Image 1 (cartoon, rainbow, N blue to C red):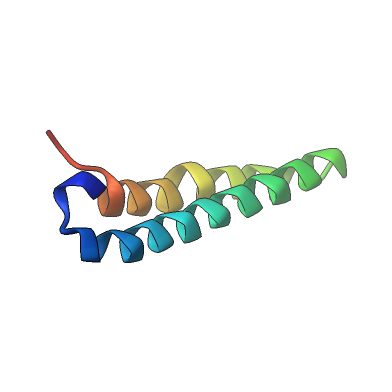
Image 2 (image 1 turned 90 degrees about the horizontal axis):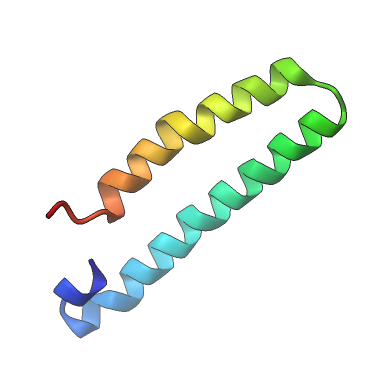
Length: 66
């Protein structure tokens, strides 16, 4: 997707992408912590957030549909 943008716009896209990626990494660490603490209800909720709203919004923002 970045290749289709003007060079001047790429740094902002990359920053936004990396921000979303760090949010996903944090959420996955939170998920692992909940699992290790045997808080399975919390883990299930976190998993739904990661694979639902977080994933869908990021894909809409950063995926280029061919």
